[in-house]
Length: 382
Ligand SMILES: *Cc1c(COP(=O)(O)O)cnc(C)c1O
Image (cartoon, rainbow, N blue to C red; front, top):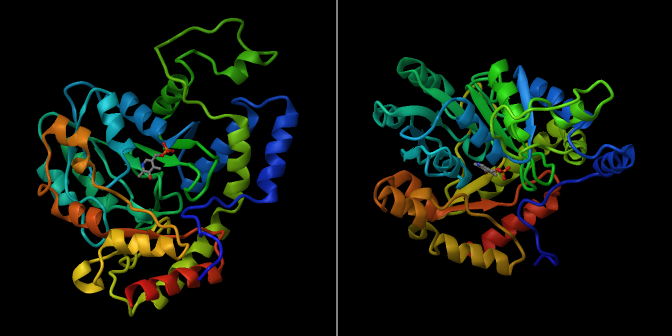
């Protein structure tokens, strides 16, 4: 058995990140400044968007997107129950109502025909989540949005490297939010980015991210900065710091290399787990790049002879950390009670919610680590 515990989703921080953070601390500017600007410029180029606004979380990006797209009280936003709670929480925060629709059982992504069926006169936006790093069918979703005059806010927390039919996630919907939380494909400890091709939206999100004042802190304190600033609209405290951007810049340098590394581990899992009584992730769709964020297997006790939670416990006992993505949101107390939802409404999301298990997958893992996961699974399922 392996000696040390394999932590699920451990970040991969190198000397380059450490040196950049130290240089930032020594530079005299640790708040929102030149490194944030540089990170935004480079990130926009990576995902093929015109504008990128760096924030302190993906949640902030989702919230600001809904806000600047005019989603508010009385509106409905169609989204997936198979996501982190942030996706639906921000809908509640702008005063709108989340409307969940079911996902594809094989991919975990929202079903476009269900989205279309859920549209009412109050529907204002669609929030697809690119589950585990697999892009949703963005041709179908953008087509529905165009025909019904809806906005599309993509939750791309898992999907920096993802493409849909050759188009990069981050350049498709009206706004796209990315996460740099500690266990995401790149990390700034906490952080996020929202991208858009609309200059007006980008500028308003930038202003709203820093109290809603007319000039950001960096410009404000520069020698040529304005003498006074004015509140244009009551904003939030969502800005990213240069210390975070220092991490982000050096992580971005490694984006491709880390993706390839996870790609290799993914293939190792695919091959080594093929004979086990588990359902493995579906292959990527043609002409699409999968961001390889989460390797999720489905554990059905009728095949595996033990259920997901027992398998999870058996792996933990063998020093392997795993994750569950996700307990479907309509099964959580707040959403059950506030929206009158119950088990039975979204069978595919529920099936995944009850049976899914995420295996460790980060660029910091060795082949040996992945082999330890495979061996532990073989033992536990024997
Ligand atoms: C991580 C995550 C978020 C939230 O990201 P933060 O940067 O922590 O705000 C939102 N949606 C999904 C699907 C996520 O995995």
